[in-house]
Image (cartoon, rainbow, N blue to C red):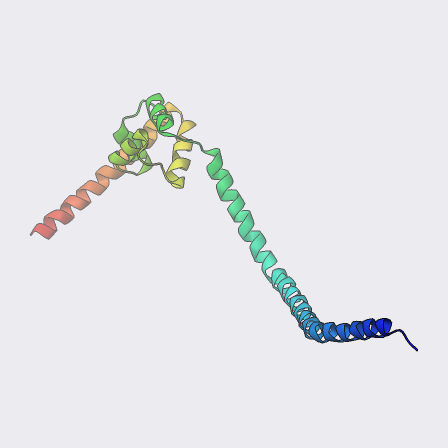
Length: 161
């Protein structure tokens, strides 16, 4: 006659395996379904990356060029004032050269605000301009301002009438 203890333990093991299998089977199906979904999403992502890669490469190249140019131009408030004194310009003359207001130059030199990229570029160009060229540039700006001034005065007189 078989040993009761061994028969009971064998039956308990069999029932335990049956219960575990019943609990794990739905989870295995869910995991299998999720693995298929992830694989499909990876395929879709790869296809989309192939479509976007040429456009993204061009955008990254443009983005890399612009910050690199800005990083080369390092200006601070003291540097702007030093450049202006080196060129022997008044704040008004510098503002005319850069097409900004006089108060803007003052704010830059006091450190209240910083020049935008375009003005930084212009300031950097002024570093390498000779005295003769600088005088010519100022004369051109003054002539342009004088020629524009009579037009605005005439417009003001017409509107007043």
